[in-house]
Image (cartoon, rainbow, N blue to C red; front, top):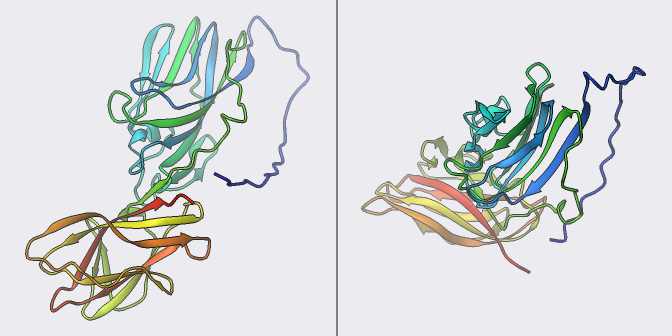
Length: 318
């Protein structure tokens, strides 16, 4: 709310020729835009039309409406040509010739290639997108085509806000197409953001060793600091919650935002291992210059490990 986007200038070069179209053999180029909070149990449609033509491309922006891992991208593509199932995919990022999501140097950021690519990937924003152009493998149809994408692991069960543009050649334009009104162009902003260990951006301040197994494990003989960036999230005020493990060799930790102390010393040394979830460690005002938290870790009589799971930002309404 209240976020303004600056205008973007784009330079475009268009190639064309003066040859007339052969209406008996050549279709016209069309596109179909669609945005929807796709109902549970229903595919998101890239295209569904009657007549003769061929489908040649997809641009797809995928927004999860539930914070956390982008499991909506487990959805498969499905294509019916002339009322027969012809193609069924193995996952959304596979459809865009990518994979796997949420893994380092895989589907973890925007990456543009000539015929396919990733538009963006953000776990804190539960958002991604992809594109693919079928120049050498177009999907031809004589009577009709249905081309859609699932959202979620099974039964289209993940709530999403999907926007797509499908490109096709056809004898006639699509009937009943959706117009991109100002309301439909409004960008969805989540109110909760989750940072996962495998894509956290760390800086080490010395005195600590870090490994990533089931989480970010910080080991120290005496004491040390680790800073974690909170990128991608809009500026504002947030509650900071964390998941971590209490265990027999647990260390003590504090949480800071640069020079501001958020929490006192918290011990993670316990007789038995316990997972602590959504522990509130303080509130922050997040800006371009303060988008990080720092963990100070100290040895607690042989307790030399602090094991961090998730960092969760919960927006505070103003």
